[in-house]
Length: 172
Length: 343
Image 1 (cartoon, chains in turn purple, orange):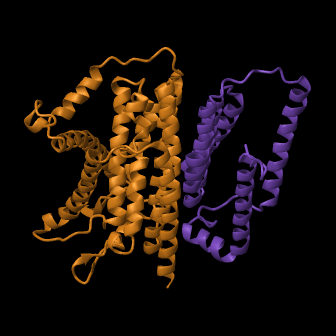
Image 2: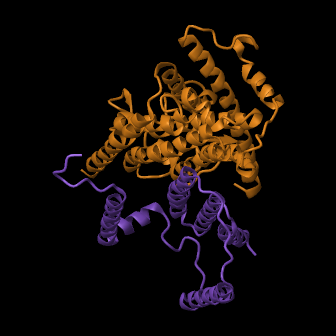
Image 3: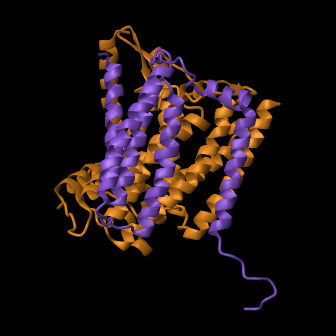
C-alpha cells in the first residue's frame, strides 16, 4: 500500500467521522465545527488527487467563508443544545438499512460505470490555467448563466428578508 | 536532490524559519512599545537590558509563570482549543512564503522557502481565512457578553474585508499570470527608465496596494480597525477571559499575522527580494535576504506608525467603508487591470 493511498484513506476516514459526529453532536456549534473538519478533509482528498486549485478554493470558500457565517449565526442567536426527541422506531428500523442499501447501490453504479474505477494522478484538469480555460472559454455561456441565476437568488433573498415598505400615501 | 537530503533540509529550514519568526514576533512587540512610546513623548521599555532589548524575554517568562485561570462558566473544549487554533494558523502560513532565491550549500541548491507550491498565494489566503475561528470561538466559548461581542465583531469584520483583500490581489495575479509567489516576484525584476524598480506598486497596482493595506489592517484587527478588542467598550474583547500563556498565544497570533501580511505585501507589491546587488559573492548571495527583511520591517513600522497616529473607527464606519468604498474600488481596479492587460 503506497503512502499516497494511506493518506487518501486517512482523509476519507476523517471525512466520514466528521460527518457522523455532525449528526451525533447535540450542540449546534460542535456540529458546525465537525462540518468544518469534513470540508478540510475533503480539501485534503482533492489535494491528493492533484486538484490543488479546487482544494484551495474548498478551504477558502467553504471552510473559510461559508462555515464562518454558520458559526457567526449560531453565535449571534446563541443557539443552545438541542432537545433530544425519541425518534420513531420505524424511522430507525427502516432508515438505517435504507441508507446502507442506497450507499451500496451508489458505490456499485459508480464502480461499474466509470470503466477502470481508478483515476491517475493529474489526469483530470486541476491546474488553475486549465480550469480557467474550461470556465471562461469552453463553458462560458453555462458559467455566465449560473452567475445570473445566483444573482437572481441573492436578489430574491434580499427581497424576502427586507421589511415590507409601508403603503404609499399614508402618514404615520 | 536525494529524498533524505530534501527531508533534512526541510526540517532545518522549518526550524530556522520558526525560530526567526518567533523572535521577530517578540521583537515587534518591543518595537511597537518603543516606537509608540517615542511618538507619545515617553521612553518605552528601558529597564531590562540596554534599550529595554531583553524586555520580550522578561515578558515571555512572566507569561509562563502567571497563573493560568480557567473561569468556571466557560465551554471548556473550545475555550482551550481557540488560542491553539489562532496560533497554529498564524504560524502555518509562513510555510509557503519565499525569502529569496536558492543558495548553494554543500553542492545542493537549497531554495529559501520551506515549501514551494504552485498555488502558494491561495494557500496563504485559505490558512488566514481559517484563523478567524480562533477569535470567534474564543469569544463564544468564554460565555461572557464582552467576549461574545468581540468575537462577533471579529468574524463579521474579517469576512467583510476578506473579499476586498482577495480582489485587491487579483490585479497582481492578472499581471504576473501565476499563483506561485516565486513567479510573482520574478515577474517584478528589472526597472522602468533605469531608475524606478519594476515593482507592482509602480506598475499600475498602486490602488491595489492601497486596498490591500486597508484590508490587511482590518484582517489583523489592528488600529484603526481593532474593534474586536476595543478596550473602551469591550474590556478586552474576545480575550477578556484569557490569562497566562493562552493570552500570549493570541498575542503571538496577532503579531505573526502582521508579519505574514507584511511578507505578502513585500512579495506582491514591492518586488520581494529584488534590489540593488553589489560587493563580493557572499554579500551578493545575502543581499536579497536583507532587502526582503528590510521591506518587511518598513511594513511593520508602518503598522506601528498608524497605531500611534490614528484613532479607532466606529463599527458602522468600518462596515460602510469596507462594503461601500473598498469593495467597489477593488472591483473597479480589477476591471481596469484586466482591460489594460488585454489591450
